Length: 431
Image (cartoon, rainbow, N blue to C red; front, side, top):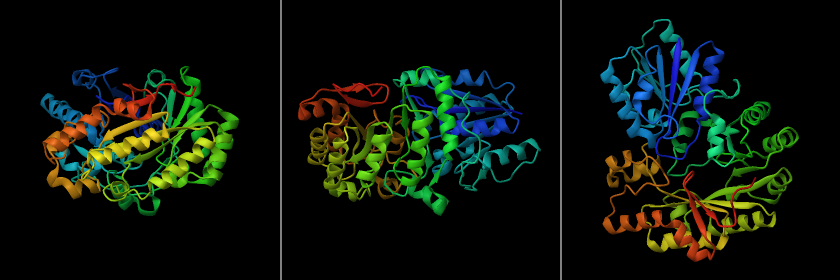
């Protein structure tokens, strides 16, 4: 049985999908013939390029995130007109938290993590057993006891080269926090106590070794876990192995609550060059209220001071377009960035997707059609209907974040197209 995965990554920073690479590895280990197509302007950007490869495909699997909804819906509608004998399965966050948007356009939806559910569904299809329930709703938490990610799924070296030699790696799934703009609050309801899980250290080291062997452009490991320092005991054991067997400089992300001397000693000793954290807003009341992030500006600055004492660079995540936000709030966010002078400053405009608590709270004030058309968190426009003047203010600061930050910081920050981040003039990477 031949299976084709399509990963939609259009009009957004280029990336590969850990979920698709994991599923591809599992299905290949079970004897299936699996191919992955990466839909991105630098690879495949026309639906017809996919349709031309479907003549001998039995099952088409689409990985669907909310910001790619308009492309996925257009693809599925066009596919239906061709009347091809291919079974379509859609999974991902869009299928999990907004299934009504696509349920009538595909044969099956897989909700939640798919490493157990998808192979079971495919075996059922292979046996000719048709299910009356097209929505597979068993939310099996993956325990990471399968094989490492498929290194043939994507053109990893080309992607890494486009990302300045940075390879993205993930150690864990899950997060203990419930930020209002994130799906995690509802993911926690699905998985409960199994929400946070860590890969076996041996598997992670094998995955990074595979990248190093296959990707000549690899210079830096970018750990993309939401909270890299969440589990100190796991992290300390992992970094011993990482230093001994890999030894490349690395970046990571965490929260100010997890930055302390013990953890920083560990990161510094094992080659961490940059730590990213989300301050999101310079306003304590917006951060704690609308965003449900309970860390104060005082605690953030305390963590920054500790980071700087270890000569580790800082990357900041910022968010504008928050309900109730004023220009004074945005200026506070910029001023906080300017005071810190981070190596990188990433700003996003808040997109309240279905499945988040902020969407539920404000959905009567959201332009749904406009939301569907936002495909890039970093170059989007506000979708809230709070009036023309408010929207113009948000869109201005979204477009001129680098200019405003440069004026306040007294240091030039340059916008980089590849990941929609502004970079401090004297900082061009860590390799």
